[in-house]
Length: 66
Image (cartoon, rainbow, N blue to C red; front, side, top):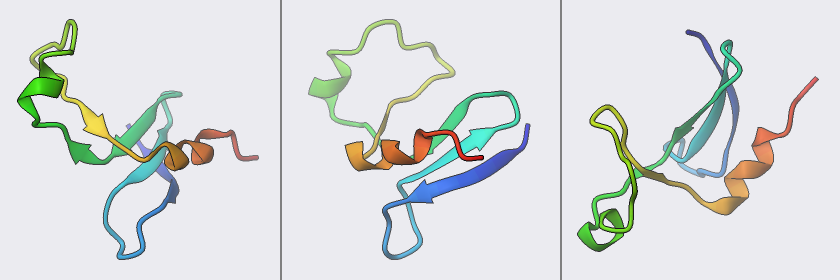
């Protein structure tokens, strides 16, 4: 799998960041959710999955670029 940088709202070069893949999916770099109360609200989280929190504004980079 290859990833292409789409955008970031970070000012210091760290997360959160959004990428697209050559498989037609998106990859999110963000803050790992560790809050036990929040994790208690999650349904059907598989062992190979995690939750990532990102600012809503980051989603503007999800629009297809030509």
